[in-house]
Image 1 (cartoon, rainbow, N blue to C red):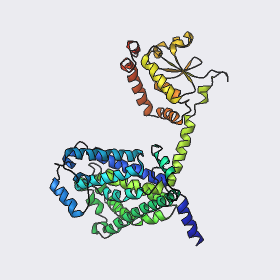
Image 2: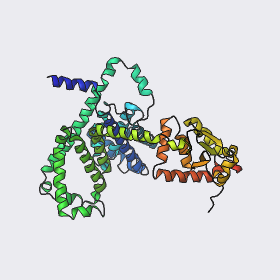
Image 3: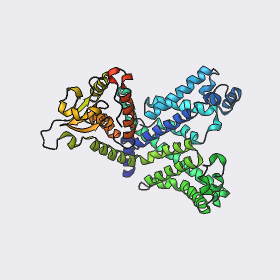
Image 4: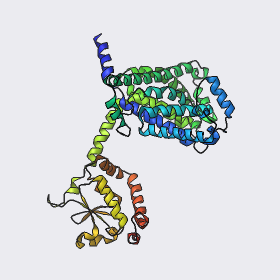
Length: 448
């Protein structure tokens, strides 16, 4: 009895899986947004009032099934465009974490309406999304991985204490409902497969991957032409689906079961093309990975914080502790350069100074005049620490604001560093065309 009371007290006082449900919200919003985006060019033909499914048949189907769709309110093309773009905006807002539960509810209504307009395009993930999104409304799925606007905090301050006390129990109830729903999906799917003859004799995968709509040319044949892979894949799928809930019930096996499920559905996305269905299932699996994700996020944040601290070599000269701090040198005769540096300085408030190179001692700048005409340079005691985009990254790396220090770290990552350098060179060559630019801003062409 004491154990039960302790569990009930924990369920009412400590929110579970906050990062997991936040990730599920983000991914479900992304799936919805990509559905809108992927059909955007053909939206009028697919979903419009005069689309491939006749309006009369569409409204008759709604009447027969007893459901609703915002697209049935009017046959006006203007109304269609308004609802479609409102749904697309709501999906994007849910993805980035804006709008709270109200926006999540709008997203659900708009997505339901769009799915009902042309059900033939659905791949099965919609059925789970219908059920999971309302459950997410009970949870604190906007606590993480979202853009803070301050509105939720203000509303929470005006909410009665009794209602605020229900936040954690309702959140945990929502998490439990999603977990239960996901386990039911797995068990029902597994038991249904067990009854099929092709799943019993181990040949189901052979027939599934040979269906034109569910095959990946050049890859699926490598699987269905191998008898061992077909049998192993067929039986492994059935066993995994049936026994997934047992793995979830054991805390030590839970992360492994969720990871196996994610790998399983990513394979479905690649081999069978059921991307929406696969990502919807992955989104629900994230609630079982909340603790591992929290641990990984803490380690990544700590690593980024250590990386964002400026190296001591940048703040200290090689000959002692009395060295002057670094200086960012830019072209003071270029209006665009001056305007850009002023804006960066005002936003990032770095601890080092940005000065026109024309005001530096001639002995410092003379060896580097060619580069100074083309890019900003980060100097320290006459030495060039970096130039161009890396110099700007080094400049904001000394900012007291974490987001700018993290930006500097990101600009130094492979791939991003090359793109940033290329973008900087394009802007530098065309700075006379930029706001504030003039004829004196023309950058010298690189010397061969």
